[in-house]
Length: 246
Image (cartoon, rainbow, N blue to C red):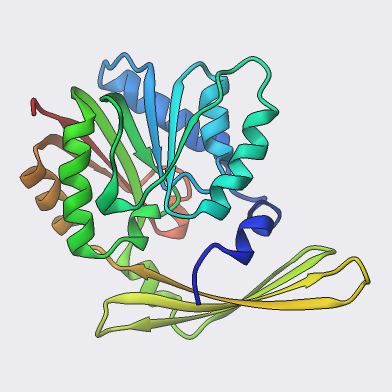
């Protein structure tokens, strides 16, 4: 089973509680605190691109990267509706194949996109981001903490709207150091019947200390760990790092 295939169509309906504007404010506050002038901005693991479009509407030249073509198709529909903003450049790439045409002033990865990447691929992603972010640029991302993942072990969750029901079961695998959850999507058809699709998601429990070490090895400095960012009450931790010359 693959992640973000059938779910892509329903992702926005099932995540209406995500405070995207608050995330956007947070990134801009980090740019301002660090005295960075940001024009070109990379949204890595952009998903359906709600945040991408918000940042585009705020005047940034956006590059949106995601490994799921289905999620990028949802972003494409949103990009067509942008009126006073330049549509983002959309690239279907994963962590180890990141390849931009030029450097960007800053990059972010939101909503635990980093947790979906295995450790060895994450090391390579940091190396690539060091190359594609301006030598004085910023990289801001969040993770779900290992403690948060372990607290979800064995729990079952249900999200639903009038046309879709999403049932997911979380299991923490100590051997893989990962949260594995199977997801069942039941969606209403035009004939008022219900179709079932299944997906499996795996998120890895990266320790903050390890992330800081790998960022440093890749060429990032002035690394800040923030446990009071958006959704911190749900175990979300933010990390901000400055790049150095390539």
